Amino acid sequence: VSAGLLTVDLVGVAVFASSGALLAVRRGLDILGGVVLGGATALGGGILRDVILGEVPPAALRQVAYVLTAAAAASLTYFLHGSVDRLRRPFVLLDAAGLALFCVSGTFKALDADLSVLSAMLLGALTAVGGGVLRDVLVRDVPLILQPGQFYALAALAGGAVTALLDAVGAVRTAAGIAGAATALALRLGSLIRGWRTLPPPGTADA
Amino acid sequence: VSAGLLTVDLVGVAVFASSGALLAVRRGLDILGGVVLGGATALGGGILRDVILGEVPPAALRQVAYVLTAAAAASLTYFLHGSVDRLRRPFVLLDAAGLALFCVSGTFKALDADLSVLSAMLLGALTAVGGGVLRDVLVRDVPLILQPGQFYALAALAGGAVTALLDAVGAVRTAAGIAGAATALALRLGSLIRGWRTLPPPGTADA
Amino acid sequence: VSAGLLTVDLVGVAVFASSGALLAVRRGLDILGGVVLGGATALGGGILRDVILGEVPPAALRQVAYVLTAAAAASLTYFLHGSVDRLRRPFVLLDAAGLALFCVSGTFKALDADLSVLSAMLLGALTAVGGGVLRDVLVRDVPLILQPGQFYALAALAGGAVTALLDAVGAVRTAAGIAGAATALALRLGSLIRGWRTLPPPGTADA
Image (cartoon, rainbow over all chains, first blue to last red):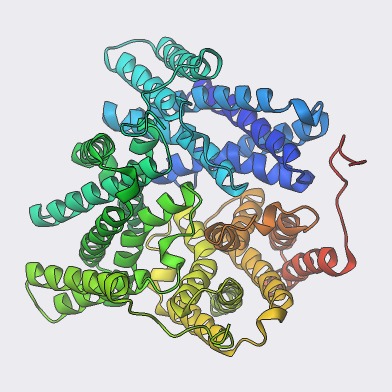
């Protein structure tokens, strides 16, 4: 694994851990809950990715930097958060950043394991959404990935697709990764800020 | 993997994807939510099975037919569903069909990996129920497998047991599989249509 | 795997299966639900541990004692439980016992797979909490591990740490395991009985 890929992965770990810790504060969990929820969000997707690739024990257990980064980011966020009333927006932005970073690192890891472009895109998307789904299920929210009009899975899939396709046509990794992350971020933030929507379900359009 | 086993697996993928898409419509999810929920239902059990068997990357990532079948079945079901009020019955029937097919394909995959009859039955049942549990947890339903009087786990275990035992005594695979799927389907539909029930919990019988 | 480690693992399976079955009774599930919930609680953490270590198929499928122990303990508990009104306390005590036993067996399994002390502690804790998280998610409870003031994750991590550190400094396994389990149990029961608490979330202390 290159130093660049490790860096992307660890920044993703940090922002996802922060998103989990912010959600823990909003739900009134204590510091242990903050670290657990932050850690599950930060490490869940990568562990799933590594287990599916057969790269076990997963990087999260082989390299101490993962656990330390997750624990530090979750603890710091928990103690330094601002007003509880204003945590929704930073939560969603941190989550979007993690989504963009992890779909890139997951796609590259899958390509390094000789998966096809399509499979790499899918595993990248799974890496990106896995931790957030675990986080949302643990606090009994409807996972962001299922909420209408969030472009959540779409952003992860598109980010993975751009990354894998640019890599396949010979682009340097840094460029492919930046383009992939930018695609994911643009779609996710577009749905949040500009209100981009899919079509309403057929038969319920008038409801 | 034989062509017959792949076919059974893919038909199971299609019906489970449809069940997830129907549930997505009933819950007011958009088309992306329909594909995500359908895909999770269709591929979750098989990925769990392959990871537990150590056959990684899982078939769902190695063979493009899995993802395409799941996405096509979920999208088509989402767009072509009938009245939202009448989706409960088709949902349950599709789910029962997936349960029957996956407990057979999971059991055979486990036998091919040299697991014992008992372990093959259990892994077959886990394959059959895994996707549906993921689907139900994602939309915050009580999983069908836990709901009283559904014969859900029983059908999966019995289907796996019949398949594995017939295989162990030398039956041809087609016959063993048909008998196993028929057993699972009969128990599941029996509980749905005929109202077959287990005993009430002791101490709460009068409640 | 030594006979001692297998014994610890199987006693953990039995008490966790009982905890799941008691919860099933409290929620009005039928006997099938009791066995499914008990089995998921008892075997979920160990299967997760073995998959993460790459020891597949997991012990729960390779050694028939696991499934038989889980099924027997869950069924017996389901049928022999006392008054439904008084199941909260035995549920929590059985769960605490399972937590203490599994963080020890999980830590030793990880050390046997040559993981570092830190990773072994983490995997031990994951083994200990995995089945309970699955149980709580399946019945849609807030997982015990996230509930404020339960010392749940802390007990699992501390138990794993004591076990791994004593092993690292050359203690015999029996002593390290007993000390680890006692640490986990003391922290967990201390929070339950003595009301030990973490600090309240900053900014919400007055709420």
